[in-house]
Image (cartoon, rainbow, N blue to C red; front, side, top):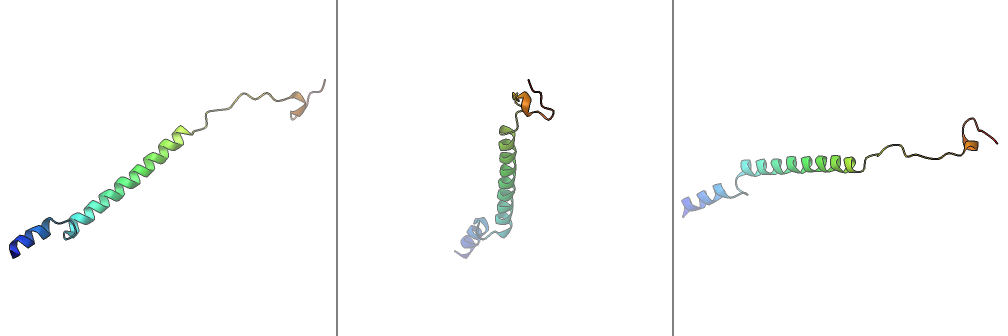
Length: 67
């Protein structure tokens, strides 16, 4: 009975400190990577598309042109 409990403790996630900390570290790395890639994708999809063609009246220019 004691041997059986020891075997289950070695396989249990809560009792094995090394494998549980490794698993948590990989989860953290995955989450950080997912947030970085998601942020980059969001910035890429909402990027500035360029200068629009705007009609500016001649009388509002720096050197205005009057009729």
